[in-house]
Amino acid sequence: METATDRLRLILGDEGLARVADATVMVLGLGGVGSSCAEALARGGIGSLVLVDRDVVTPSNINRQALAFHSTVGRPKAEVMRDMVLDINPTCNVYAEQAFIEKDRIAEQLGALPRPNYVVDAINTISQKLRIAAWCQDEGLPLVSAMGGANKLDPTRLRFSDISKTERDPIARIVRKECRKRGIKKLMVLWSDEEPREAAGKWDAIDEHGFVREGQSILGTMSYFPPIMGQMLASKVIRDLVGF
Image 1 (spheres, helix red, strand yellow):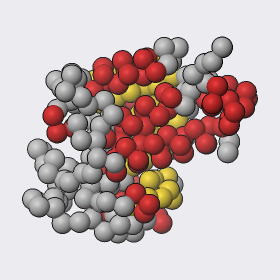
Image 2 (tube, helix red, strand yellow):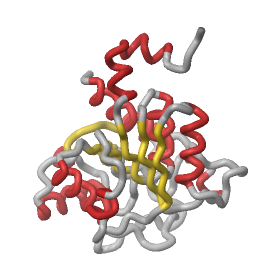
Image 3 (tube, one colour):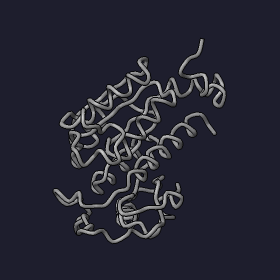
Image 4 (cartoon, helix red, strand yellow):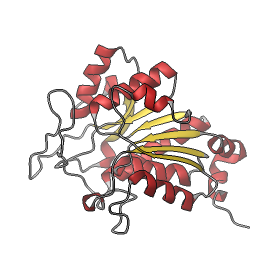
């Protein structure tokens, strides 16, 4: 009888499939990047997912977010993502929380959630990214963090590296500088060396403190770019968990 894991087993083998089934992955942020990452992790056989996002689905999300449909507008993203994951894999253990991750309470908030084997940072606020990286370093948890995908068109320019190897990415530039200041020694990131295009409207939503400005979702995003980033993040997590 055909099962949902048959094609996974052909690549991962029984041992690899058991490893991902035993793993807990925390996905922070369920926007265009995080929602596609969570979907791919669920389809990839991850046994437990911890999903955190503060927002509800809005019409402008529909162009790029895996959980955004006209039927889900107005619903909390964490709730929609939980339902999607369980529809894909009913045996997955899903902990979903609609919450804002406060930069001064990150250790407390994340420490209260089920402990993951791997953390995916798909949040777009730099101050939170840095605190998440510091928490993972303190806890000895593997982390991969998404850098900027706004105003970019070419997904073939995406790559993984330590933050110290990044260039041209506006978000990575600030994160790289702050990591040195804060003693964050290593941070694996997904980034693109493509120069961001000028948007039709004002696009620079990062203020002098490294925060995304309130209401500044005027960054341009292509339908395919954030989902590809999410899929790549999921690939990194699964390959690392299996040991490829």
